[in-house]
Figure 1 (tube, rainbow, N blue to C red):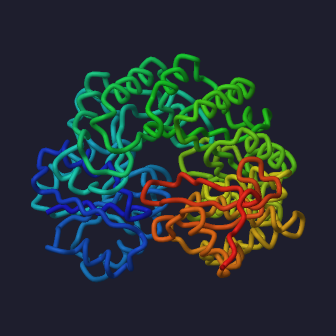
Figure 2: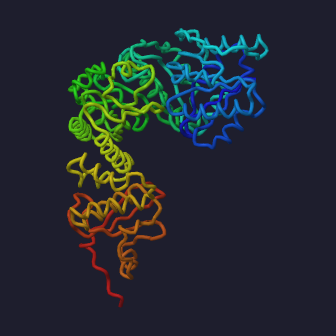
Length: 532
């Protein structure tokens, strides 16, 4: 038996590649797929891998799991030296000599044909392997591939994030990416639609397209979006795509405008606003078009928009990056991810960098310093990343941030320093933000706006300590007088007008069984009756 052990970054993820390998293998009945994740103990993963004593353990290798894969493989070899270990995937496809010290077989490049060849040879040899071997994968003709979306696949992705492939490769040549310059191959629209039909009625969280640049072939992408809109009632989940914003056109944006709210999620890799930086990594981008198109896409308010920047690229110094962050922040995407350059094996960038660039020699190969940005400056960016992620990206503080953040980068740097490296509850984060803002703004306004944000996003009916108000006897009397049943509604008093956030005394109340629609009463217009 051959067991493919897929080690995901989290429980909710499910690698797609094992199902391609199994369904395109002549001996697929000999293959078992086990989905696990790197957060389990190595002993637990070992037990899953070695259950039923497989002759072969195949391990897809990615930047997020390679360290765990190596540790697991060493443990398997120590206890079961006869077990054949196979490595494949991106981390096994470049600079793999050191991996041959651990694995018996390494599959390089696209694996479907090579994996099948390996299995056929092992079957013929009765799973006896005399020497270590490297199989070089060949470029796959998509029309020859069998569908990975099997009964087993849908069983394994139940309630999780699922993945879908409509195209492979990328027409662009970004130097920091392993897919740069390897061309674009698409399934036919008929094949794509047939595969998407299989997801109708399935219980998954979201279907993520793994296409490197979904809209690289514009007409292809638009037809897929139209198909999903036409069939949206058959899907109980949304769809996630990585796109290039500078090549969007009005037709694409008009399609998004016509889509049901929340059906689509778009991730846009901006990476940098420094034109010299983009040119150095062969990232051809029209920044003016990118900004304009991204603004239009966000303005539709139909889709969740995720934007990315990469710190540590050539010619990008600290100030340049800060300016880029502030530019992107002003566009108000739903998420802004501040990432750090990974110098990947197999990327053109790795061969371009000189000794002035320092980066980790082990996964995830993150940049440490460059001739343009120091390790200390990169650490400052990490503080800002933490602040942006925990406050802006959480989506829990929209009114607060819109009203009080004047200089985005400086704000997230300062708040990030206060929380960096700490394990904090939501109440902790709220109190830290509250105390920080009260240094500069009227605490009544801060408290009022943060209270509005909190009850707009949290239905626990328990206020954080810093947002509580006096629950005196008059409050119960007030609720009774204005006809608010405290068993049905959660009600709070604030010192702001919820429309314009000016000072004023208001009662906010919400029936969480009906959603988060907050209603309010102007308390200046209410006179509490005497006890008599």
